[in-house]
Image (cartoon, rainbow, N blue to C red):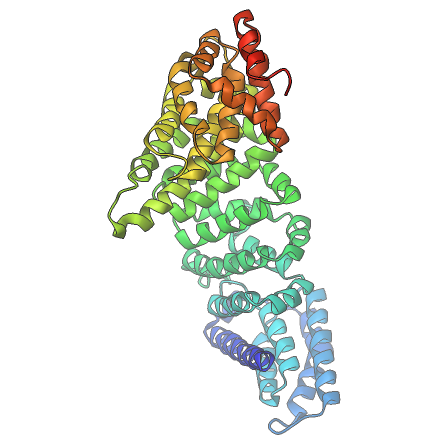
Length: 510
């Protein structure tokens, strides 16, 4: 039953697309100014010898009633042959003076009621049209394809028809000519009035269709082979004020960047770094957009050292990220907000989680890590998160903040704010060790493993009996926990007076 409904919907969509497309085209032809066209004897000869006989054959077909499959196949082949002949001569557009006669002949065949023939007619008719002169037809077509792409079975059929490459080519046409020195086409000047608005409407549907396709694992190779990332970056750049387009593109990036090959391809797209930062700055309070851009940046920084450097090198990048941190922290830590505000608070918390992950991954790069460890605002914001909430209340947020402190604690030069605040950080880590969350315990151990190189921190650990807990962790079945505990114990044993204490606790035996 479900399949029957899908088939019926497809048939209805096809008929609507074809009728709208051809009606719009005929309307445009009636309004077209023929004075801007020029003919030639060669074109007339081609028309009379190659085109007219086929059109006469079309007109001889009786419309209405049923037609045989053989007739439909013949008409489809004739349309395809005529399409190819016109394309070879470069006459698919307005260069063909008698195009209205061609369109009317094609329109007549709709009455035969063949879905297969109607698809061929739609393809042929759209190929004769400039994307802007028939903007409404293109909009309806892309919108229908967007709806179809939301169905998993139909999306596979679209993918087999090179759907992603077609949408990429259309998006490139919608962004205008790449040759800025090319002379304007006088025949299309009037048709292109209002083109930015129409391009925007079409791109909303187009990027939504690509967003649907990005959900399919089998589509990733098509995205990669068509080199779609630079084009999508340009689309977002040209339409920064269009929330729907930007959100669709951001969703595509967030989905695809989760996969290694796609993430590498995006990392090699120079425009993306400046673009993402500009968007974060410009649309800082649009949580759904911001969280996806941050998730993508986090993926880039997680997989590529070059990407970490590129983000840091962009002018004002750290200021933009820390500005977002300050803005979203205020609402996020207010966990006792009225119930009506809890959804908004949750969105803010999601942004902050993704933002801190970006900082943690950036800090893996030595130059970036040294700079962030020396940044008082950065360190203080992270400590604020750990101070005002517990791992039980906001697990992912606190663990991400402590993981970032861990990465920054690797850099213990004189400029390090983390080293300078080792006392306060040690007290916060003690809270994490007392929690029941083993991920939090592991992060605390990792930070202590770095900070216990400082004599005062070693004294703090012994004084507060933390070493007893560290020795107990040697019994853990998690090798990461054991490894981190061993690191702390190794540093503690650097002080002669601690060795007997550790031995009495059973550290040597374990």
